[in-house]
Length: 474
Image (cartoon, rainbow, N blue to C red):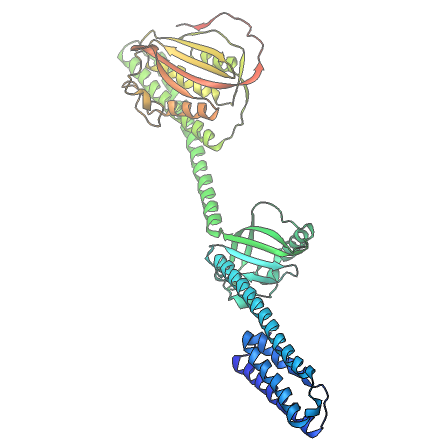
């Protein structure tokens, strides 16, 4: 709609006033009639009131005075009280229309202020904001959206959104989804990833969220949507996934080949040990075998950590008694005391790693003839497990950091701390906690007690086949 300039408005009003003067002279002086023609005067009065509010009052006074003066000059016999009343009506109309005009302009200015404020908010937001009408045309788009898509605002307003920015293979499907959302009067919840095409033909991936707009009567009038550019994030995630897969491939190859090499080395070490007499040479073979065992332990730790981070196994009820008995069976040369407890706990297939690390540490780092005991005690919805040994114990200074990754161990034969780090990670994953105590309170030199808690599954197992203590002795 074309807006008149100030000069054009002044020209129109002046032309109407001149025509009013001519019309008054022609009717009174030429035609010598008293015909009511002054209704025409409402036009310049109303226009002046709409455009300049109170300035319409002088115009009304001028036109009213024109009617009275012309009648007195040319047809005084026709002058009545109606002519004076008409002057008052002109002035009243001028006041009323001027007042209404001021109110309308005030409301218009408030609407404009609110609209500009909303537009300002939209422009400072760092995402694309667009309003799409039910006819698929762009009704409003913010500055960031224009910059992102590479268009000027006027190039997008009124254009079909799907034909303009949606990749051609996806247009019909996206258009159907839009129409379905309008028909339901509600958009699908959550965030969706959709590609768009810029003016230069580049394709961007946007994370979309949108909602259906309705009028006062609840009828849908369009959709307002916001889109965040996640193109770089998607590409970075894809590169990271490929790098992760490649690293896992290298680890799988390395683990497989090292395990094969370790198996060969152990086989030859066993053969060599049988051919040597007791003495220094056989001791060297034992040290060789211990080194290979350490390599196998490292590979096992790496595999366990990978499974932990990959969350390959789900939590489920696990027979704690069966896990403990199976681990004790792996240490036939150790002196381990255990009384079975028919309890199920919430864990996964990696629970055996906890006992392998703690029992293995007690056997490895204990003095010759070390005695180990495994105790299980049910406490409400939790189970407390203690693995105690009569070894050299853990100094108080080391206890706070013993379960940290690569933390130093309790003697010169300790490894890099991965076993205890894995133990803590697993226990915390199961919803429990782990700590280390003195077997005899206040006497670290009398042995160590590793304790941890697990959540019960709420189900009771049948008692084990024997209730006698399970003891493996050398």
